[in-house]
Image (cartoon, rainbow, N blue to C red):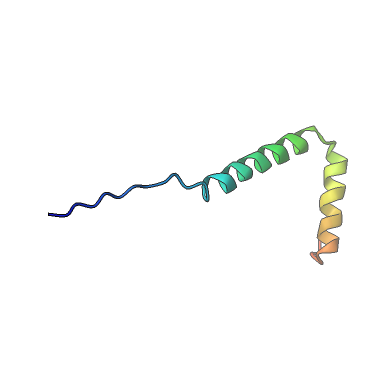
Length: 56
């Protein structure tokens, strides 16, 4: 009789991007929470024009 044992290694291929996404999201929320409303509006406005999306 032959028995086989399967082992599962902990894969970091899904863990690292998830941690990065959480860190990026937290950074964006923190930065946008502390920026002045006018500066945030101007940045979004410039991106809209740069991508060709009409905003007016």
